[in-house]
Amino acid sequence: MVKFHTIGQIERGAYPFEDAVVDNDIMNGAFGDIANGKFTASDSGKKVIMQVEVGDDEYMEQYKIPSGSHVRVLDPAKVVGELELYGYPLPETFAVGDTVGCFTITEIIGNKIGAVVKLTA
Image (cartoon, rainbow, N blue to C red; front, side, top):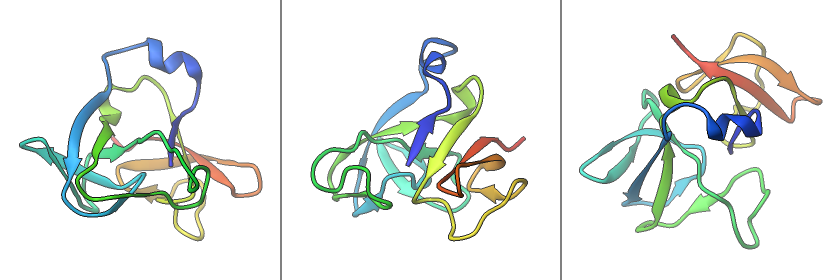
């Protein structure tokens, strides 16, 4: 799951979201790119799904989004400041300086429950 690091980030900069549809079941926090209104996951993707979670799976380590769903995709290049990652897409072990998708970890949250990240230059 991807979250803003501070609530004020929503008010600054350009609107960071794009709407897309997924062809296959996909995890919230998946990296990828958008082409022709469709989100395609890839390890080298420059955008990330930042879907609002609802239902029984809300707040779980992994939140699966069913195929055919509209997703809210974040363009991190339009975000002022850092973001936070929790659960998927974080690997089982991680440290400051590691990269996850298009992000670099700058800080560990709690007892490794999450990470503060910035867009990798």
